Amino acid sequence: MNGQSLFPEQPQGMTLSALNARIESAVNRQKDLQNQWVVAEAVDMRLVKGHCYMELIEKDSSGNTVAKIGGVIWASNYGSLYYKFKDATGQPFGNGMKLLLKVTANYHKLFGFKLVINDINPEFTLGDLARQRREIINRLTAEGIIDMNKQLPWTDVPQRIAIISAAGAAGYGDFMNQLHHNAYGLKFYTCLFSASMQGALTVPTVLAALDRINESIDLFDCVVIIRGGGATSELNSFDNYDLASAVAQFPIPVIVGIGHERDVTVLDFVAAMRVKTPTAAAEWLIQRDTEALAHLNELQEAIATTVRETIGHAREQLAYYGSMIPATARNILDTNRVKLDSCARALPVAAVNLITAQRSRLERAVERTGDAVASALLREKQRLQSLDDKATLLSPVNTLRRGYSLVMKDGKCVTAAAQLQPGDPVTVQFAAGKAAATINDVNNQQ
Image (cartoon, rainbow, N blue to C red; front, side, top):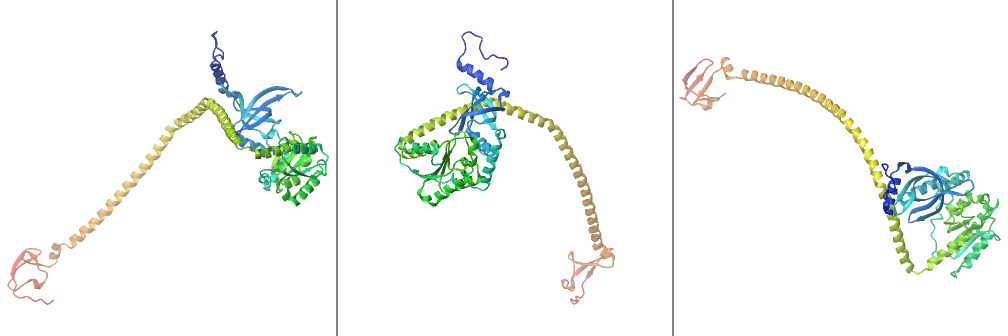
């Protein structure tokens, strides 16, 4: 800021908006705070009207938070970053992930300070297990089946639930208790298809349960696959291609609630709905049915809330872009000024080269024109000489000199005897001199 202090020297102080404006100018014009790669852990991640808000933190070796700042991915950039990360890692970025982010510091006098995330390096987050999971997901994607279950339509009120779980598992008990003792008195009809949810028997028993459900598929609205939390290694069985393929192609929607919130398996990517725990699966079904029974007047408030939130976030995003316009404009002007200088330096040389080339072309044209004119004059001179020779040869004077004579009557040449009558006076023209005569006899025969 050209050495200007952020704080005034006058004792009466300044307005808060004036101070915020100085901070905004100092932060947003600092190039060292733009497009910097930063390592941070994402927490409290939430998606609001297309914008992804989060807290970025740094922890020390003891797990204590030593730094924290708000971050945002604008809706205009969120989709591309989301799919870029998901395509590379096989899973979306989420809470608890350590990420390598390209950020720009932004301060707005009304909305405060945050880091605007412009890019994410997915390779930083990849581990051995994630790569293995990605290979399975890539195979399912290449085969065109990964989204088949997600694309199935849901019934308006799903109540007939097929459950795949271990009969005595705590997660199954939590699910049943939550589902059948809901506060709204909603009725659900459940049927358990028992399977081993841990160890080597997981895949074959879950596949067998899916086959049994498929035999009476018309009796159910959806399938719920649930298992409580445990060690991450205990969930590896659910990162299985055969199991994921069966779930992806199952003819009714599948809900997966395996492990804790932090746990992610391949089934989460192919199921119609992924929830964090068995209890959450029950809550999701209850919520869906509750929403189906809600009164229509709730829609009016939802629309009003949506409009207010959309306008608020749009205003914040607009303020961000507005604050970046001066710096962006200067960068564009600097770049185009360099291009203009380069063009100005190149213009004289280009003009000289063009003039030289055109001058050479004109000189060649002049030479060709002179040659063409000379050739044309010579041809016309020869043609005129030929005509002159013919005219001289056919001249009446030359004809008379060869012994011929002309007979003229009344000043006109006589070409036939029929033009004369006996007694007509005529004039006979010779090569040298002429004579007067009178016609005595006329013979019209040739």
